[in-house]
Image 1 (cartoon, helix red, strand yellow):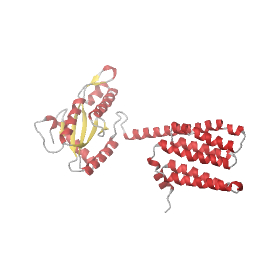
Image 2 (cartoon, helix red, strand yellow):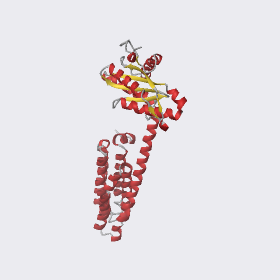
Image 3 (cartoon, helix red, strand yellow):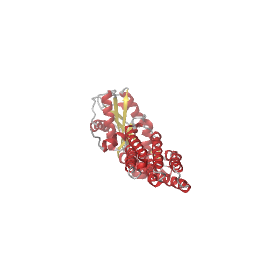
Image 4 (cartoon, one colour):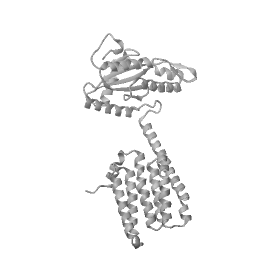
Length: 352
């Protein structure tokens, strides 16, 4: 069954397909050169077979699972075949020189500076030695000192550009899914992460808690100290939330002064209550803002659990929001859990 180009790129990666293409083109050119140099037909045919075998070998390799440095080892057969082709063409460097440029361009597309520089001595030998063996003029052999800096510069420029594009792409992806002020996941990303967490919890039969936070007295900070001070407080809230959760748990900003925390793989519901109370405590501490001033706010927290195995992130978040509404109605600094009563005498863990 034929394999399409798209499925081949998906299985092997673009780097493998491109490298295989270079080998295949080199092999086809060797075959095409046979009528013009019949005296070297045998060696050209051998080179063509080796090129096509290298192309097939590259595609067959587990390319995607290889570290970057290992994939650069393709330079060994590549330069060996280019050198052999130069010798077979009787030192006709103009016929094989473009392949040095193409291969270094490939290196720049898929490798970093270290791998590129590692290939330089191999390329220099593959260029100069066959010319010397073929009896080429010393000036032509010495042109390696011109060719190598050119191809290396090409590779480094391409590598730098690819790296800059990758960083820009990562930054754009981060900005699209994260709040610009706090660096936390935004509402859409928080809901997507919550859905993924609920799905994992359902598969593994694990307890997950969702904490819906609303800042108390935040509006007064904006009104009395200004929006710049409010932004400083929100940034600090994001930092404090990160400090109160475990690695792998989620803290996100839903918008305005509302935040969400998702706790996975809990062994008891009380652990979520403890986290909620710690968050209320840490957010009640003064916040340092510009010009040496401080601001005080608080937080109310509504909590719900995935007790029914639901994976509907919006529905679970709504439950936590209802618990938060009850917490706000009871006064500041409350932690309220959606569900049946746990301990009516405990004001910070009262349940709806």
